[in-house]
Image (cartoon, rainbow, N blue to C red; front, side, top):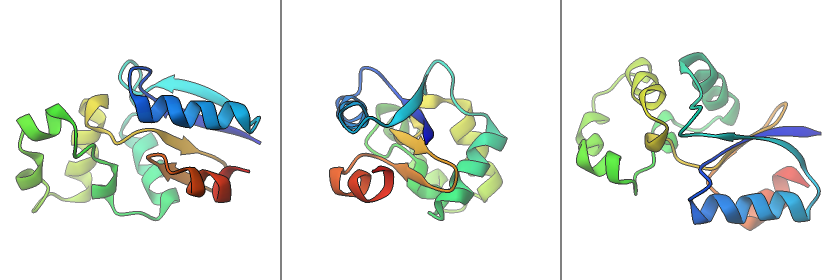
Length: 118
């Protein structure tokens, strides 16, 4: 099984996820989420496949999120507006995102990776 691994190489959490994928011999294609952020349609597919709310895909601890006061912007934002925001800047997207054929994980928790990607 090959997965798509959206990550930011300078992110410690992303490096932990990459190490987990390597240790567990998961075949992946790594994409730098800042240099090549997923476009609006890719994001829509990823989010729908995950079954998670759109808001879960925002990097709420990120500098850009705080500077641009997304906490307030997202209160009344439509799903389409949220996709526009996410597609506009890879730094706004929570990472890492791992996308497989029928599954998606966002962020890194070892137990979730153990259950989802082994």
